[in-house]
Image (tube, rainbow over all chains, first blue to last red):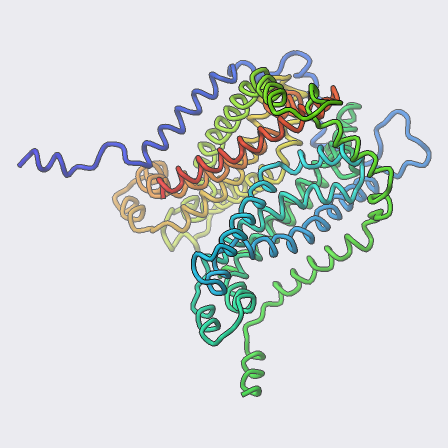
Length: 286
Length: 299
């Protein structure tokens, strides 16, 4: 009897416990592999000076330029910060508008829901389109936006429009992936009814499926918009006139007050967007 | 029939906030194109076409430049580069991604307990606490609101900017990258974990509270175990992103794949650059596969 009781006891580590343990062990391996030591977390002499000076200025961000030489035609710092934030938003909004269009188009082909209505199951046309769309989406997504930006920078030179394309490619891919998954998971009842009434595949997709998945799609799109703002800010490190450019420039010339001005400007924009999209999420998914 | 449809259309639920938000976003997108100052003529100019033609020439593997394409030589060139740079770069990138996601998940799980509206109150898990007053209640509310605000601030800073700033202070080792990724992702995971805890079935934690368990005991015995499955799911989702980001952060000057990409750019070895980006694609796709596999096992 005791043996039976023992057999019924669950294993000391279930699948989840094993995964957790493996993850922690992988963390230990990574720590050793990277040659890290806790001591390196304390900055060296020079690093400590920079850190001290920089962190102190968090409480007194610059309100006017700190540079020793200010060109006479340079705009005041706050106006400059305002423009940098504006440029960041312009890049993000332009890229998102393209991403939504391409994401929807690619998501259409990358979802299984539409062609199962139009083509008989296992049709080679549907299958080819699906596989091609999935592969294209995976390739678009798997190169980071900054690497696209770098590639385009080398191939075409510095151009705002090209930077927008660099943001668009991975974002359209990600949107297409998530859209297609959401559409595939949406309830199919209205789609089946429309199909039975003789509607075409495109009509079934647009009227029967997309509206059912729309709240989730909209919520995710807002979240990606927030990510696009961050990504667009970082594009500045590659020479585009977004917030990142000025953070890099001011930090390199040790004008730490200015750095904090730009950091706070970026923070405010992202915070507003975070809170806004959180509210929207709650309403959309209520 | 159509009158009935019209009636239904008028009676549909409407949300002013949603409408204004969508209108604002649409206007922003349109405005970006109209007033953004994009120079379409310059983008499609001859100069850029020439630049592109030169780029296409430059990405041809170096030993094959100015001669017939030969797969044998191309293969030798590629394997040589991967042997010299590829292996270390991949291991470094993976290690950075793993370590930062472990730090992010652990600190996210700890912060989530303080951020969850159900637990971080004067009287955890009870309905009465919602109405309760007094200094103690105010203190708990302030603490949990403060933690939630710090989570937002943590996730709102781009990893690249954080890594850039840390690099100047900590010097060129892997810590700046790990810290930057860990902070950003702890902000995201902390929020998700807090939501998981808030939405969890309250019966077990309430029962524990009833027999006198403290917050730490409730978290350790009831909340974390119940949230483990989702917690791992989210952590692996974020790990996929970390692999992507770790590749790029190396461009700041720390040995990951990005370091060798930036190095190839500085030497203008664009053939190497494209091959290394291709290696990054393989790494990211492999990471996605592993993550999808683990997530299916955990679910």
